[in-house]
Image 1 (cartoon, rainbow, N blue to C red):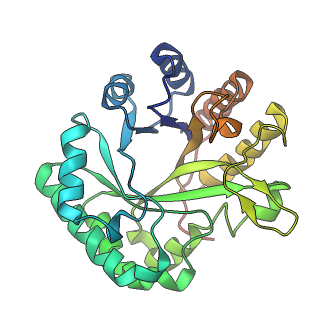
Image 2 (image 1 turned 180 degrees about the horizontal axis):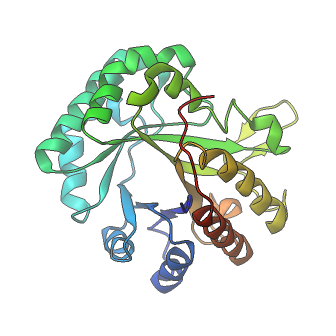
Length: 275
């Protein structure tokens, strides 16, 4: 089961041919494509499942009508794409977020779309929060929609197990065998400051070698494959991108990711729910 796909920033003028070569090499089930319907269509044509995201969707539940949000994305995303239903919501609006997400899923179903809900920031939410989100999570499960989470790790990798890598276990504890399929819509390394805080704009380049980064990704995959979880590496852009360049996987990292995916494909897996 290939686990590692890509989170592709489609508005960064990257050569489509190179992206599609990397997509083919990884042979992953899921990729996120942002802000580029044409690229999403091209990735979809490879046989992968594309989760289409259109920015600005941060805290969308606090700014936009749920049904109109879905209709807007539906109009942009090529047929067959899954719709990314908001990004990194605020924990202070859980009841409203639950209603908004339930309405968004209802609209997806009217339009024949599959939604990817919540897409929580790494380290979120708290375990008790899932009870307030029961309505939308149960609707996602019933309608075969997906649950998106973001999971980042710093150095050393093991210090980020459970709290970041593995935080989906809170969902399994809350919903058990009625948990929607989980996709890590953003996975990657993020620089940890001396005080333990994370620098959201500083990735692996400059902190780790390509081999070290790939080794840590392999550790994450070793966890995910036990639960049937797929993950999309943040982020495909240009290495000189002022904001996200330090997150961009090098050719060596892509090659190692492809090798990890092949190894995971050859290993029989027994999906388990929770520890």
